[in-house]
Amino acid sequence: MLYDQIQESLAYLRTQTDFQPDYGIILGTGLSNLTEHIEIETEIAYKNIPHFPVSTVATHKGKLVFGTFAGQNIVAMAGRFHYYEGYTMKQVTFPVRVMKALGIKQLFISNAAGSTNADIQAGDLVFVRDHINLQPENPLRGVNDERLGPRFPDMLDTYDIKLNKKALEIARTHNIRAHEGVYVGLQGPNLETPAEYEYLHRIGGDIVGMSTVPEVLVARHAGLPVFVVSVVSNQCYPIENIVETTIEDVIEVVEKAAPNMRFILQRIIYNG
Ligand code: HPA
Image (cartoon, rainbow, N blue to C red; front, side, top):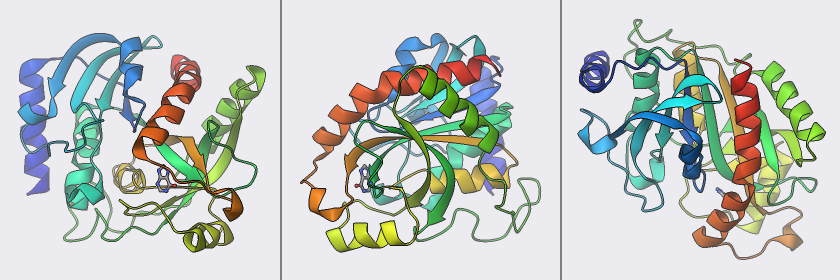
């Protein structure tokens, strides 16, 4: 049972460290270098943690990092799991369950995303204010364990809008290009056709990516407030502007903008 698996993972982690994180951070594609700014207490490879899936993406490091960041106790996932890698949604989101069990009280999620909004350029930050879930399967499907959360979680106040406002203010003060926007989650692994980018724009999407939504659903189910920041790697609207994009292009753009994202996270986490 999921609940027992979470407890077994937790029990293992507690044999490795008694560090108590208050915040969880998920580091997306091209964003794992943030760990260089964590005063590390312990690092634990995913492959050693019972029931953790093992990352198949070479660009993801695959470890839980416990330590202090911006003066707060955090646990960071250096490398996340994607549905397109072949995992089930329950596997993709298992680490969120474990971070909740570790005692975090808020989850910070980062990702790389394409833009379907003409005002949002490559290199910009977007603080997610809502999402549209176009991914197949749902991590909450199946028998609901009330110990983990309610059967029908409400999604009205999913995103921490007050924190978005703070993040936008910090960005403005420091001349960092940033927006609030709607994230559309797709399964990938292919990028979208021009017709699909046009469609995503028309349904109200500002940015599009292949992660995050399942993690947000599970965090919401578990009663964790979430803050999501997307780093835009490629602009795909208007569609005349779309250029061929490789994973190397995505990583290059995201790594360049990563210090901006780190700066904003440091500011908002510092203030608790
Ligand atoms: N589409 C989907 N996911 C992405 C993109 C995109 O254009 N860019 C980065 N992640």
